[in-house]
Length: 305
Image (cartoon, rainbow, N blue to C red; front, top):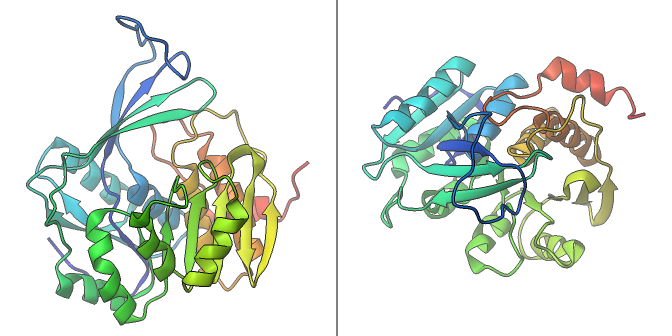
């Protein structure tokens, strides 16, 4: 384990792991004794924290990722991904092994994710000294909603560093997500499980410290709440055929944070997010790729047709 004390733009906490990608003919998948997967079943590094870190690094931000990893083949895949893309990684030992998931991906890009929750222990924690050192040398910290990150929130709030989090498909009711929602300056979530996205977004802003709340809505775009005003952000046109929606929300968050750290207004940040999310949907599930800064800024300067 190596801790780098050099200045970092964004510290990403948690969310490192490996996915096994299985292309399926449709979702929901009808019951059958077996399916032949001619396009292949592949295992690659990349869960939510990995993808946010990848997106930030591709946009030129100095990125550091902190999480627990196992001494196993999956952990080696995660370490190799970070090395390949020049992302600093502090990997703490995880005896239970590296987090894993199985993603069923349909031809239209929709996915069903199955998470192996056995790769964690109730007492998993980030050492406070390590966490504090990395946080205080970062301009911003993006916090995933894993258990070690929940225990890290008080230290992060005490450190005074700006925070963001992604609540993913929160239903607006599960109390586990609330400490993350109310501690972050920027909150991302999916509108998929929300009956009233605006009501949930305003509750987050009223009860917490969020300056911006973003609810992504897939092909329908996103909702942005900033300065008390709710704005609809149109979806961006994908630059190629859509093949997999996995990682689109992570790409959105990374590009939004890039804009925020560059001093852009929230609506502009959300436009960056929409473009990055659309790009992510064109990347096959077997690859780890993210839009670069030059392409993002070029597309942002050109209105969608």
